[in-house]
Length: 122
Image (cartoon, rainbow, N blue to C red; front, side, top):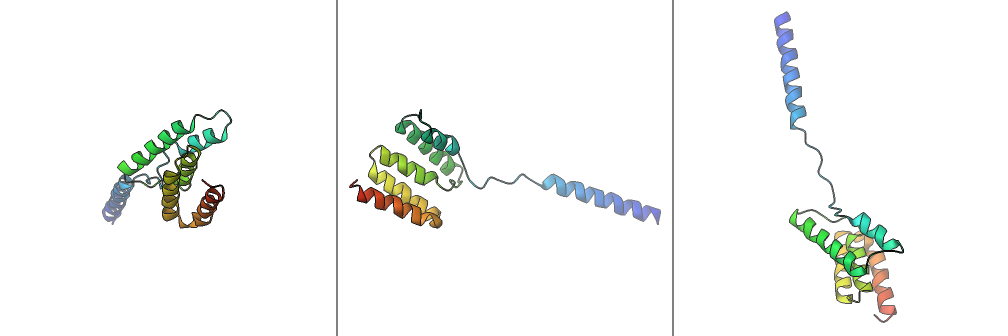
């Protein structure tokens, strides 16, 4: 009887070790790519030029695409605002449409941005 108990305990221990060894860390849900830093820079008074921020965020878009990862909520919306500030209205509208497509819950905010843009004659 003691041998069977020892074998069961050993088997259970081996199975547990095998299962724990197979666990991998969860993959992040979004590819942030410095997004938080860019938003913080944008809100500071000594923010870098809009073109610098646009380039940094566009690089993040490319990195996410190369990893087949999703951008976080607000990423495309913020990029659209930067495009608008740089006078690139077509790109702003495209970025906002992408944000709206990826996150339908952002539709009201995106519609507000587009409405304000049109109201201001841009």
